[in-house]
Length: 135
Image (cartoon, rainbow, N blue to C red; front, side):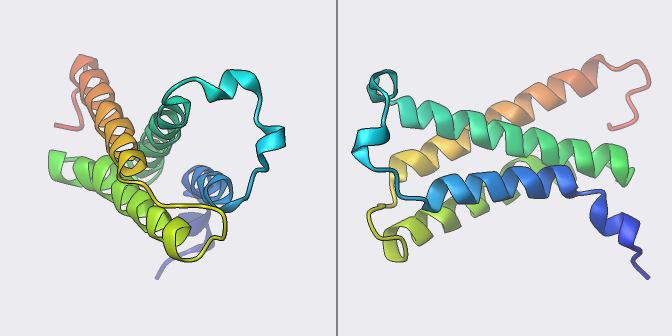
């Protein structure tokens, strides 16, 4: 039977996911966009960073809190599959639900990039650990 502690130990990941959701659905008037935000592909870098953070947080919560048997398949599910599906769902929400927002294949590709880079960083970090408990 699941305890409250088992649900609350994912709060880091839930917080990042809620922040991403909020940033994805709000309508920002063009008058509030700073000049430095108009750099070409600035929004793609934001997607990469947000989904990198989500992937790392999911891996942290999944490996350190629940002590999962972190084989590669489970790590891929946590760090790549879940964030990419979440990003794709949010792109659909932007396209079909949010007024003034549009879904973008480029944004979803940036979500993929952030998740894949996070996976690579986590795998590198795990390979450097002395105990190699996650292999």
